[in-house]
Amino acid sequence: MTPGRNVPLISALRDYASRDTARFHMPGHKGRMPPPFSELARLDFTELDGTGNLYTEEDGAIRRSEALTASLYGARGCMYLTGGATQGVLAMLAAVTSPGDRVLLDRCCHRSVLNAAALLDLRPVYLQRPIVEPFGISDGLRPEDIPDAKCLLVTSPTYYGVTSELRRLRGLCEEKGMPLLVDGAHGAHLRFLSGDAFVPDIAVHSAHKTLNALGQTAFLLYGPGVDADRLRGFTAVFGTSSPSYPLLCSLDASRAELEQSGRERWEKTADFAARLRKKHSRLLSERHLSSGSLDPARLCLFSPNGYDTALRFEREFGVVCEMADAGNVVFILTPSDSAESLSRLDSALTIVPDIAVTAGGVPPSPLPQAVMTPREAMFARRGYVPLREAGGRIAAQPAAPYPPGVPLVCPGERFDKNHLEILRELWYTDDEPVSVVLE
Image (cartoon, rainbow, N blue to C red; front, side, top):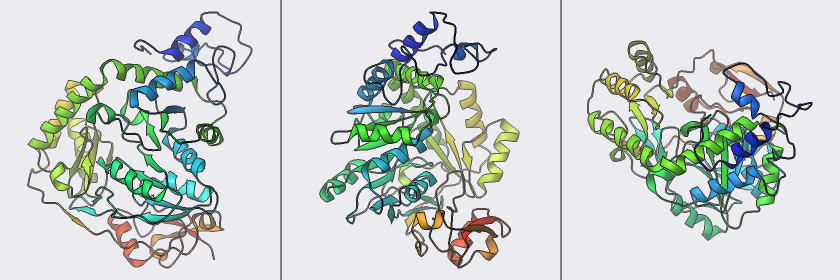
């Protein structure tokens, strides 16, 4: 780990490690592990005087690092997470709701949102998006009006890189007196491409998805009016009581790197992605969207068979994508990509015939019938049946092809003929087991 300047947490832990104390406390490796873990082990502590406490310290190195991140993003405050964006989704929904509350959920949500609805006993009202054909992905969320509810949670950007107009959605929420929550798991870098310092009431970002940070690292950003103590308390409820100090150090280091050269490096990445979009017409671009915009650093390639195309990329070019589905292949570009890797990606894209793709927005499929609440369905007696026998049964768990983990049928909804056929198109087989409520 070679952090830049102004890394309060890393500095504090290095100072503490330099005392060379006899460690008769957790973790069991006692600061001594063989390479490649030797340096990380020296900084891997438990909660001690001098190392801080993620959940309870009032003023320490962790809080100073979080404050620097908040300032970098233009937020009132920041909270580090070591349980990924999932921990943040659970915490922010819990912080603004009570059991039985009605909540507006972007239908293009991650399965962690549905798990939160079940755990917190929430009543979801789903907002749908138009579909961008032939890509078969969701466009930006753009409702003309929203019903009354306790909050709105929107996914922006999506796994495919489509963003929604958050300022407009915030205006709709303010009219209703409800907070706007954003699952921005894939958008921690966008601040350094748009220059927009807008922060919704609460947003969660996965640092490990696009930043130079270790797996499971994430952070919450929040604005004025949020009960920070309540939010912090719920990060502890849904997080481990032994958060990893190496993961926290990774957040400290990645933020310092962004402060030094984030905008310059990300703009170079976006420029390269723009050149590829211009060169390869099958790459999703702004002209294909009707109500959203794009993450400048993410590429979504339309292919009649995304799975086979992804396999060819790996076999012939050693290019491994982020995800593939029946009609698309998705690539995440970051400043950590080498020039050689980017050149290989450019070459690999040439194997897909570069015909013009005319995309248009179409209405989404009607939602399945909801007959139980998410909590009732998820905690009911359940079993598995093959997909061919699921018609008319109630889903006990999300039917969410992963990646991207976006649910087609949610817990408490009934499988119908239309959605079974869509699941088959998404490469579910008739023998695929699906979780259903045993009535």
